[in-house]
Image 1 (tube, one colour):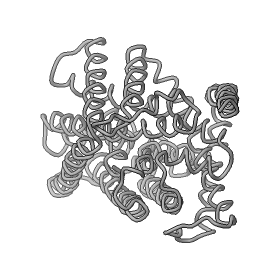
Image 2 (cartoon, rainbow, N blue to C red):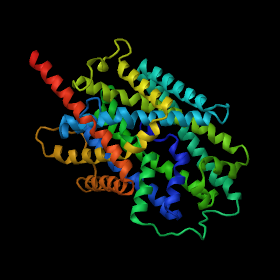
Image 3 (cartoon, rainbow, N blue to C red):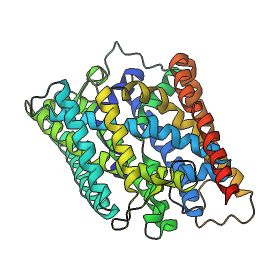
Image 4 (cartoon, rainbow, N blue to C red):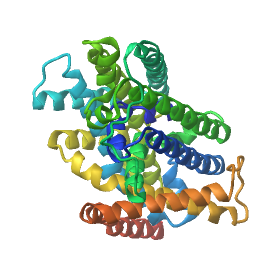
Length: 425
């Protein structure tokens, strides 16, 4: 789950975004390293919270327990309308676009393939978490094998090329703090999804031990893979080519293997995105189920299928809304406006860890390494990323925050509804 949901399509395209901001090879590798460290620290925080609260819902539960239900509700609100459904739509479209490399598809053809992928994988997860997790395991194993082959082939066959790790004279090696933070955001986008394994705690065997172990091993493994992939890109391609490429992995394959290498990489991207999509579709409905169970959504959203033991109606509404976002194309605007707000909640979640440590009666099976220094560093980094985004793009940031804040009146409606229902009983 951890590795499979993180590694999707971003590592095959996102390096160009970072190299376009940071114009030196050590600087690019530093960005990816810092992203990996921040993700690992976030995983440490999540690991302790997951060992403390084993209820389904993950981050929603942690924010609710540490603060008030309204904070958890706003996380789930943003998840459904944009953050989670938006990334499902985005990855499905990427899968469809790479499918078009082999099968001619028009604009609506791409949308049809994306919608079909969402519906098929939602159907797999509908009939049982075991089916979804088995599919996830197979695809994760396949994509890890593919990444290892890309790294091995890149360094071995790439040695035949005339130059390696070339930085053009036109590139300035000076990078401002703001530019570095912008590059960091691009890198963290590629690490997105690391927390989703916590959503299905109640369906995990020995979750107090399994989830912390999965978070730490998974994020460490992804970091190694990402640094290795970027090293290969910069080994076989000049840095300016990496920065300007729209399909850097395919260009690197063409440079090493020759014409046809791009087709091989396109197949790998399809495989990778399909696996990531499976894990993300599996995770999200558990949050909506938890919200319904707490009386913050319609009760029928929390219905568990008597045979499959899955939150089938939550899976259905997620699939429907994600397909709507694909069909209308609105996911692009929604997702880019709201994705940075995820880090506001991550910062709050970590502050919540400090608060929960001081409460009596809170029992945990795992303690985050480096407490309180590393969690404090994560809080500072989270809000620095948010502040940099607000300063660099205030209009889009304000629109994204407005969408999240729009959940407040909805929360108070549900809270009042629950209060009236409890009073009547």
